[in-house]
Length: 276
Image 1 (tube, rainbow, N blue to C red):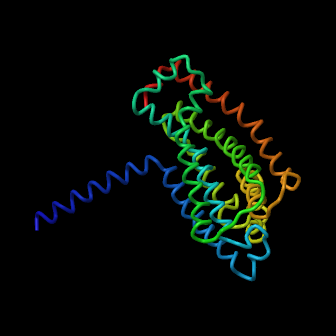
Image 2: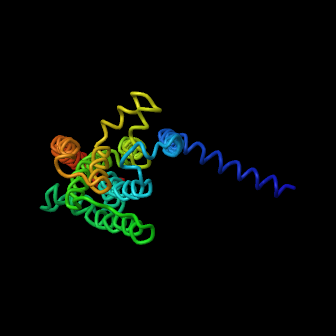
Image 3: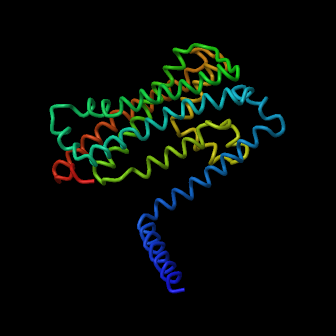
């Protein structure tokens, strides 16, 4: 009996310890709660695709499988753009090599691009598999100008990479992942039309939810890619989302490099590059 009581006493001590540790990271619990809310919301809007003939109401979604695998393939790139730079910084910090690398003559843009090159190469392979398996096993056919679709993918990835660089700046200064970058990534997954038409946000979520999608770069990137590959539209039809993405890029890319360079200078000044 004493052994059982001792066991549960130790079990209680570990649970209390872990609970107190979790309380010190309240924002993580908040994001986990939001993640569940986003998942339930996503399932709600997906269910609306199949009610009342909604699929036929949206040209890009007449073949939901084609729309989904396109969205998932592009989402893989989106997530790489969001996370690769911050993860590379955290890895260099953990290995104790960040200070050595940044003290070399390698300039900031070269370091940023090189540190995530493998991640993007890997993302290319995995994203291609979505399209390959859809075509090979499920007879999903794409049309339109593949180079134009690739241009959308590159510009959208660069825009999101700019956000990833801002997240990496947060990691350099504060030694932890950027919670706002994670929130933006999750929000983009929900509101950018990866799993359901963005029109459903306005129809069932009101102006607020519909307005959120219009402020997210992935919305325009994914819409442009689907217009090209699924609807077969050409350059003239997709100029609006393309120019919107270019505007995001012109603003965010220089700003992100500027912020990252200032973050590195601050960390050098404080001598905290080797801390993590």
